[in-house]
Length: 222
Ligand code: CTP
Ligand code: CA
Figure (cartoon, rainbow, N blue to C red):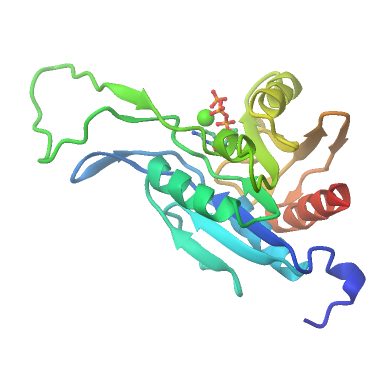
C-alpha cells in the first residue's frame, strides 16, 4: 500500500465482519428477512482493509460488489452465518457483528411450496443463535468483539444493555427512528459505547463513518 505506517494501524491484524441481512427459508420459494442493505458492514470491511488488516467479510444476500482485497463468504441463513463466524473468529484479532441477523427462523422448512388455505395462517418460529454473543463467549482465541445496535427508542439504555449482556468490548448504536438514517440508507449517525467510555459521531456517509469506527477500534486495541 502507499499509505504511511501511521495510517495502517491494523497492519498484521485479522478482522472478520458480518454484514447484511440473513434470509430464513419458509419453503422452497419464500423467506423471512429484513431491509438491511449491507452498506455499513461493507464500508467497515473496506476501511479495515485500507488500514492494513487482512479482512474476512461474511455477507448475507445484498446488492453490493465485494470490496477489493477482502475475502468474502456468502451466506443465507443465520445458522450458516454463525458457523462461518465461529470458524473465522477464532483466527481473528477483531470481530465486528454488523449483520441484521433474523432473530427467528421457521421451526420447520416446508419441503414443498406451502399452499394457500384458510383466511388466517400461523407460522411457528424458533430463536436463532446469537452469533456475536457466541463469539464473545469464546474462551480460547476470543477476538476483540464489536456489535451494532439499531434502536428506535432509549438508544443508550438498550445499547449499553447489549454491550453488557452479550459481553462485547464495544457497541455502535444508531437511532433508526430518524428518517433517512441507518437501515437501508447511505447515511448514519452512531454513538460508540465501551464499558467506561462513549463518543457520539455526527451524521455522515457510511463509508466515512466506517473509517472513524475502525480507527476507534484500533485505538482501543493498544
Ligand atoms: N446479533 C447476532 N445474532 C443474532 C442477533 C443479533 O449476532 N441472532 C448481533 C447483531 O449483529 C448486532 C447485535 O447482535 O451486532 C445487536 O443486534 P440487535 O438486533 O440490535 O439485538 P438483539 O439482541 O437481536 O435484540 P433486539 O433485536 O430484540 O433489539
Ligand atoms: Ca435483533
